[in-house]
Length: 203
Ligand SMILES: Cc1cc2nc3c(=O)[nH]c(=O)nc-3n(C[C@H](O)[C@H](O)[C@H](O)COP(=O)(O)O)c2cc1C
Image (cartoon, rainbow, N blue to C red; front, top):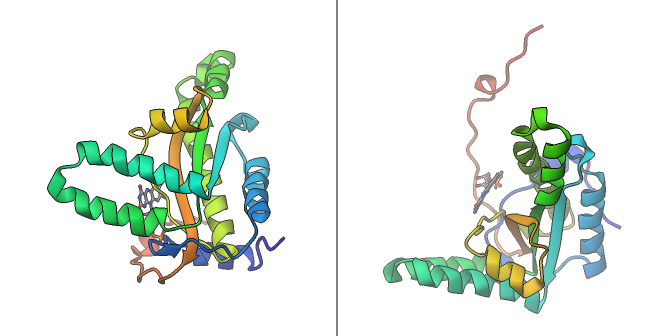
């Protein structure tokens, strides 16, 4: 499988947000699954809790999640602003090949809170951090195979309908959505804040 064809640093450098994607795939669906399973197995989690869950939506399922998002937003976004919302959903997300739904299993979080009451307040925060680590690893590995992806947050607006549509465990909390597809346009230039204000070294 072509995971990490570049070295890690190159892959990190190349990962970007791709808002222009088509519904072609550079790899097989089995390889997409393998990337997700690889990350879910090997990315670290707080207390090795393994609280992250990922749902892979391909084909009609991918289209459906963006239709749910569009129809949910149609009800709440003012009519004059909805046009641009619809264009974004159609051209940046639904136009892609698939979507990953990132969840965190709250049952796992609550069990840890019960087992380690002293850390009770930390576990939800660590769960979010764990989720972020998975998102970054998968985002980078997808890009490395030739996909382009973005990270979206239409939760909690879409949670109930998504859960109902795919029979998602009610203990799973939706954290993020990652639409991906073949890039049809390169991302723009990225601005960087001065690195010496962001990293301090004392030696
Ligand atoms: C925690 C996190 C949340 C983000 N949420 C969104 C989002 O809701 N929608 C979106 O379009 N991009 C989102 N992004 C993407 C960032 O805007 C993007 O990564 C950043 O501007 C740097 O650009 P790059 O990804 O091309 O390197 C998110 C990124 C991170 C790390």
